[in-house]
Length: 440
Image (tube, rainbow, N blue to C red):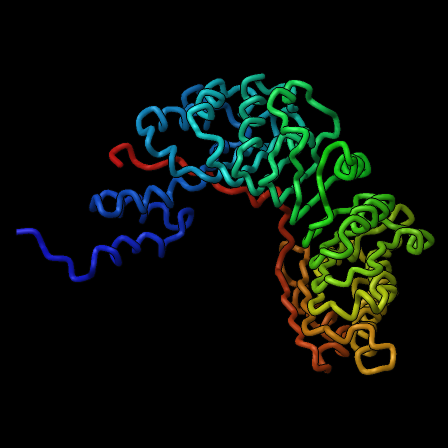
């Protein structure tokens, strides 16, 4: 005699939603085999985000083990799972040539998807496996996914920026890392209609070369990409000239910008500090400011001016903007092995002075007639050391606490997080997901 459920079926069917598809994949796979009741909810979670990446970076991969081939075989065996796929990540970021140029089954697998159900697409390539090395039908398949009528988020790396040009008006969040500025005429066959505009809400640009060319593409009226609705802007400046690019973008979203995240050029020289400012004038909606600072990275002359630049930049933000900022976040990267005398020497004292200047700027003006940071509620500082031995963390933490004392003593909420070891983004790749058991 079958057991009578103790809970209503409606509640039992919600059980899978309490698990995370990546962290609890094995649990969800097992749960999907226990009852038909759990099969669809589990598959909906497990197949919502498909990640295609090599499980063996820089190693030789048999033809049948390529991610695209495995994905194609999965869709052949269980075609119904394609209906659950809403997010797709294709990652070819191994140091060597990678798997993407040789995976002949990938295009066939992607053609089995309904591109109009894809809401988020992340395409990560590497410089050695250039875009034009990829099979033509794979490039066209990627462009077709970008053309999805439901695509809200697009993230690209080491592929042409013009993939943005084929996206439809549904796109709201865009990220590009070292994208290629040159065009690919082969993807024009899936370009968007001339009447369609993309109105971005979030933009992130991390380019070590040619940022000016990418900004020129984004602000060109012919490309019909509107930035006047941006609420979040995140930029890496690889050179002092890139600071002007940040100002150019801000000029298009002064009224809408709420969060500005900036990683300034760490090799800026002292004479260049004034000329490398970023203009936040009249950003009256800005409530959150984040600066990621390589505090100890020297310029070609051996000087370290990144914190100096930050102190100058923060002190010059006009009241029309600073009086609306509620949250200030500083991420400090430090390599004490590269600092003569470390934190107690001449260079360390200079860095301390500039960090203390930041603290004084955002707190003293709250209680004085200048009233430049009157809305500030929170200051958060993350400290990342490059020392793998983690034996300098306490020293750095105490040094920062002392420099930021005027903040911690004020009414502003202060939070310091000392991270033991700086980890580069290259080592934070998302692990591959190999799909459900055949029996599911």
